[in-house]
Length: 55
Length: 489
Image 1 (cartoon, each protein chain N blue to C red):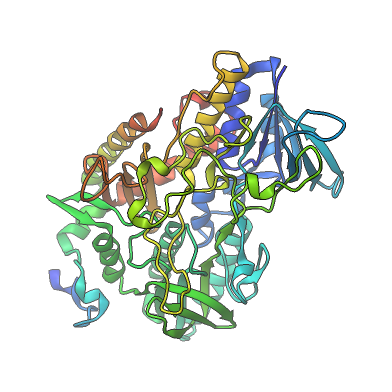
Image 2 (cartoon, chains in turn green, yellow):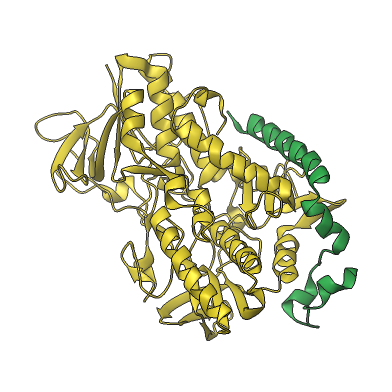
């Protein structure tokens, strides 16, 4: 079923020249367990960024 | 006793005023002059624009907050600066005109020891024919620049959704309304939220959605593009952004200077010099920004506006305004202390400071029309500038220093940006991006200009949670509720 995410892409259209996520990637984007992990990771990343940015 | 006057009560001005007052206490005076009666958490206007939040949820009245903080709040707009005073007094002052019901139209001189210009931009709808008049939105398009604009946009969107339910196909055009716009991120968020909303309403198949932008490539964001560390690659934001549009079946028009807006149609000039049109049933086009039109006058009454302000109306600060061509640009061109070079007791923060030059490479069409994004300086960097300037002024007021002690250069700070792609506790997504530094430093980071360990991007539900939590945290902070000083900018 991975292909259904590509059905709307027309050959040689601008959309044809980029990457399109498949079903696994799309599932992970809203998979609650995986996103809890990502939530922690994003917060750590942003905290480090803030600490680096204050002068 | 020193008096610090802050012109503007948005993200940067509010941050500067509240931190200055918190640290200076009752011994010194902080005055905020802003024409608005309410504070607006602008990043959430996107959700108001698709009916997922009410306008009331993204604003709150400023007066009670400033009363609690001991800040002298004047609901007024600043008209002019007299940095040397006048013939009668050497004390510098600004001229304000009240906008509240009680004193509407009355003018007053407000003296200062330190002045922070945080006026934000004039929404220059009038720069594009048909987009609006002056700073007022026109009748053909909608906007999400203010909570009221976004509320209006939501109602217009509902009308389109109703038409689609009745079998009428609708065309959506979202993007920038001029070749010199900034804030592509807001348009980026809005188009994805519209697409998400139309899916939720079951009418996505009835909609043609197009993004129109002055960026020379999708994902430029006014920052010359970004390379993210992603999946073992340094991936260009061009690929990241194009992928998001392509996945959702949305078209895009790049390198476009919209020069005319009519009912249901825009005319635009492309970088290749071609003139084309795009029809729409619903359009949200971001206007270009300009300075708010402050004047400056010296002690003898001579106009010194061009000494204090750049031609675009933004205040000159400690930037290198003589960098010249793109090839000569350096990260060190960007201001660090935000102090005005002529009058050391004046500072400008957020959108109000004049950038030395764009971040994106300047481009123009074959006809000579400039078409390139201007530098973004909203949100996190804006607040960081406000706090840095407040801390510097506090040190100078308290006699601990004679020069600014804190810096907030966009070439030395990072930015965290969470761009919503649709709201929903379990169905929402957003792009969480970190960029370090905001202005690329090709000497320090050859190739991409940025530290790949600090420059990342990902799309997912977690980022949506972050954005939603930030909405509540930053409104909590702006209301000066317990622990507000501990919440980082």
